[in-house]
Image (cartoon, rainbow, N blue to C red; front, side, top):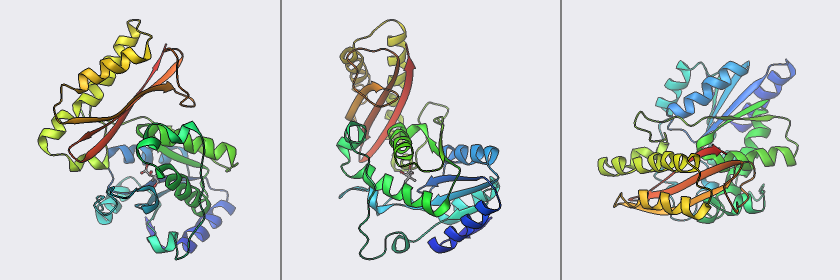
Length: 282
Ligand code: PAF
């Protein structure tokens, strides 16, 4: 496995591989890898000739007062894990190489898809994501790019960006990986103290219970939201950011529950904001 830090070198490597006809799979990450990331790498390994994993904590997608400085980082450990998964390249650029002084170019997907849910609580976040991912696509030139369903809104926005800006690649969404007790894997789980870790189980539990309620015939969006809110309220430390039910293909609002629905939650436990989601089809 090779580690490349320079943007120019990475772009040159990708161009050479493309010319030789090899299929490149890209797994964009911010590092501090867990099994959720590794499931993306495994899928990329199965579907592509070459696997590039980018590790870049992207300052542009963090708002003022968010955890950019504290975001967990451990490149040595990440590289050891990726070596085991037989990744070909770790691309770990420096901030000043990605955003040199005077940098002022951005990629933005507009509309409801980026302004609701995490877009409402984290203004500018998705502009940071679409900008950095566009840059990574140009630099790494993947045929396939792998993203987790845990960040369902992010995956949906990136799919729209790829479609509308004609990027010559396909996005592959990989299912959420959970701990045995249901907590969705996230690099931010390390911030949770034992009490918060226990309370955070209400995320997956309320999603499962909501799915059952819908399967039993409930079709009223507000009633399902109230039902989830009441379950989350049983955790004294939980502060709800949002509970949303939207159309699963474009996040459009739903007058009633029908078709493919994304139930999505963002809840804070102490200072740690976690997200989770579930797809239901009726
Ligand atoms: O999902 C993430 O880890 C990040 O948003 C991504 C896609 C790597 C862009 O920085």
